[in-house]
Length: 204
Image (cartoon, rainbow, N blue to C red; front, side):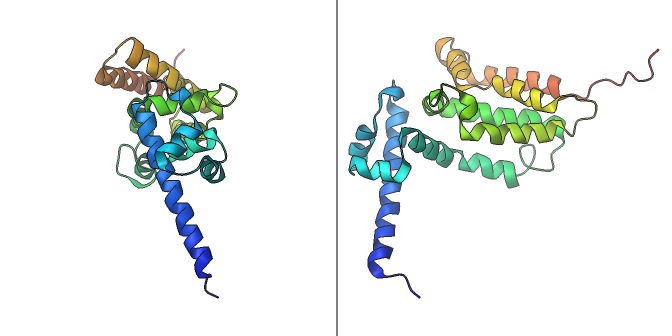
């Protein structure tokens, strides 16, 4: 049975409004020096919709932040799930672990204000951000493939700690560490962690 025309039109209007809100929020967060001060009313006004429309589409400010973050993250997710080495599947874990961390770092650098706003929301814990568990699971799975490496779950947490949004903001913003230097330092650290531990079983 075909969908009635008014319902189809309402769905199209809702999708169009949602996209307008995401685009407005994207522009506002990118240009704001204090993203924490941006309100749902600010975003609604920029999108040309009522504040109620924003709340119906995203629930609350945290929901809007998550939706915007996920939209920006989609190309990275596609590269991780089906892209070529070293980021995509099938890459040896010693190469993929540094590549995954570099992808996280670059994403945080490119989306510093949004990442900071999202990780600071909700009990002030970045570990409650929805994307965190996904990255942790990917890293843990790669680390589990490295012979002799113990505690892959903890190691994944420790590696991700180097990409926390507040640390990235501190290093890139306050201390002015150049992007490429941050990437090189993190890659060196990740390679050391991901290297297979030496075999000591035959030592006396």
